[in-house]
Amino acid sequence: MNMSIIGDYIKEERKKAGLTQEEFALRSGLGLRFVRELEQGKETVRLDKVNQALAMFGCEAVPGRKGR
Image 1 (cartoon, rainbow, N blue to C red):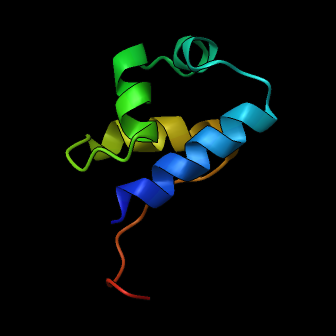
Image 2: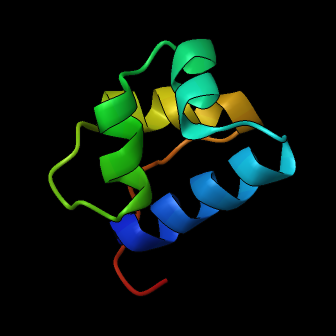
């Protein structure tokens, strides 16, 4: 899973929704530090929390073959 792609997506959608990182963290039930690290593409984030963030935009990360 390429976390920078997911992080970029979260950041873009958050900004489209007019939310700051702090507001997004509060509304999604995630910590501000996690949101910041996710948007920076940190590779070692918990998948359940990634899906919690993606759920704000009706999406989820699912297993798949690399490169497809």
